[in-house]
Length: 269
Image (cartoon, rainbow, N blue to C red; front, side, top):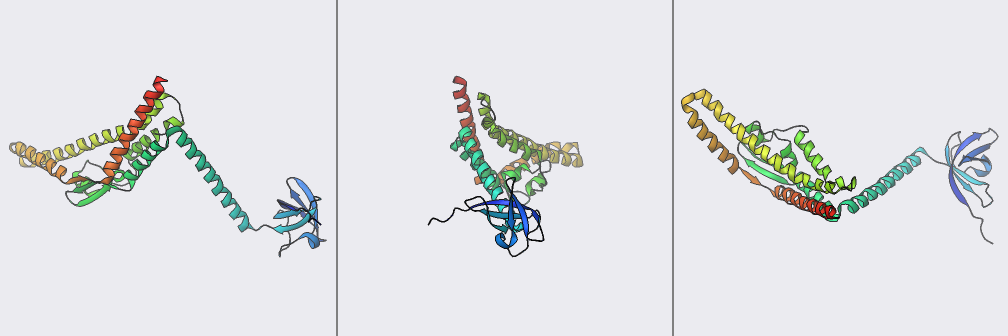
């Protein structure tokens, strides 16, 4: 003889009389139950409590079990994790379709090079190493502060670097050929920031020389300029590039090449 088919669903208790008779709502439909015959939990049923309801093949209530708050929390967390995983897979699929695996790989190398590896080693007032992200947080207004890495907080340079990274994903939002040029943004930013950094360091050294000239008098101006030039040479000699520099530079060049090539292809079509 074939066993009756039993299905399960989540419901909520609407009523529960002292006599043991009650009703449970499942999907907007109310079903009667009896505590003595159907209740399977150790604690008494309570109104509005969540329960797992099992039905017989005839559609009648077979059993009810209380769903604990911990179980509900675990289910919600599992649902959120599943939703996040599905959303992540969807975003990744869209990114692969819009950018390609190679471009995404270059972006990954750029981010890793900027965050995880030392970009520059400075040996001037003290020996310090900085990643590219940390370098973006430093100020070259003070030579000593730059050499010792006295930066703090989120800087405008870091903001524009993130903006340049975001521009790489412009093709996900627009099919216009010029959107592909967004991949050139990191290289453009690196060139501009490096130029500004060079000018700031040079200006800081020049200011230091001018201050010395002001103390020693006008006759020492030429000597101060010579000292400033020597200081600038010491700064460059005290700097060396780390692995992060080459990763950031190479990946940004690759991205720019991908972006320009994509722009040319879409423009022809």
